[in-house]
Structures are given as C-alpha cells and as structure tokens.
Image 1 (cartoon, rainbow, N blue to C red):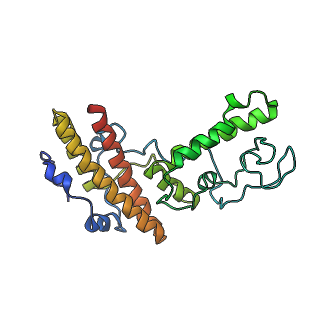
Image 2: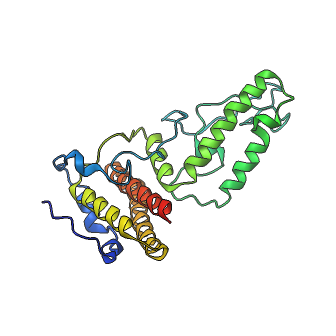
Image 3: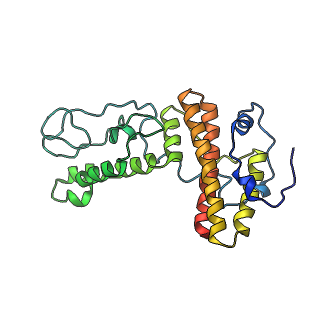
Length: 255
C-alpha cells in the first residue's frame, strides 16, 4: 500500500529499522515496480553505490594462499614482497584482501591498525620507492601497490567490506538494479525533503546522526545474517546500508 508523502518529522528518522523492517525486507514476493519518477533523490540513491565490491578482481573463490618461492632468490614464504631479499612479487590472484592485512575473513574487523598496515605495505611497494629496481620488478610493484590501495579502501568501510565478503562467497550484487521497495523509496523521498528543508548545521547534524544510527542497525543485521549464512537477508541489508550511506553523504555536502 502506498501512503501520501507528508513532511518528515525528525522523530520519524529516529526510529531504527528493527526486526519489523528486516522482516519486510525478507518477503518472498517482490513488490511491484515503482514509477521511475519516484527514483529521484540523493542523486543516484536509488541505484547502486559507487563504493561496492572492488574493481580489481581477485578470484571469487579465493580462500588464502599466496606465499610461495621468491622469483628472485628462491626463498620460501614470499608474499607481496620477499622477506629475504626484499624483491616485490607478482600479484597472486589467490590472495584475498583480508590476507593482505593479516586479518580473519569476517565482517567485524578486530584490528584497529588497518591504516598502519596499509602504510607499511606502501613503503615497500609504492612505485616511487622502487625506481632503482628492474623494469620487471617495477611493474610488479605498480600492480601490488594498486592492489593494496583497493584492499584498504574496500576493507576500511563497512558497506564495501560487506559487498566484498559476499563477492568472495560467489554472490554478485547488481549495483545497477533499481530499488523497488515502496516503503524504502518513500523513506528516501521523506529524508530528501528533510535535508532540503534543514537551514542550519545543528538540524543537519541531528538528521545525520539519526541516519548513521539506522546505518549501524542494518550493519548489525548484515553481520548477523552473514554469520548465519543467510545470504538473501545479507544482500537486503547491504541495500539499506547503501541507501543510508548515500543519505549521510548528502548531509555532508550541505553542511
């Protein structure tokens, strides 16, 4: 059932999408497509986020590995660079992003030094720092450096990390697929109106805080669903996370 879109009150935003909303998201019968005109708002909000699964492909079935013999000195245990001679190694498509940073493959990252590890790898791999190496090794460094950048950007944000975990499970998210949930689309319209009508930073910050709480709720929903291998519910959680992430970006632009 459609309802008329009235003016948004801040208390409407404060209500997090709890169990009832999650239940609605798991219905087997999809709602009827919504007219294209209602997909407007927050730019590309009704479409996929640009922060989805990374563009540089690792095998969807990658489960680890990647430490072998160094191509230069033959030492074992060579990873992105050789611990014995320091030579940069070629990219191994069997290495997933979590392994690059020595992390368990899970949504809730238990390491708060991700940025530090990223910087450590870049000190060894950045092309500007291997200019004296052979052309072959400089090419390896360029590829590995770009891979580490992608890995850091992907794992440092909850939504892109969630999408990547699904990708590793062989689940592809169509980021061009249009949202057809009437209630979610209605909320998008209302939230857009609230942001548009907010004329002072305090109001925008309050709206932003409320949106972030909703994002966190759906983030927790994703983790619970993913841990239970309920991938249908996990995918639907990422759709809500994508929406709220874009909504936060809109408030930031106006602040």
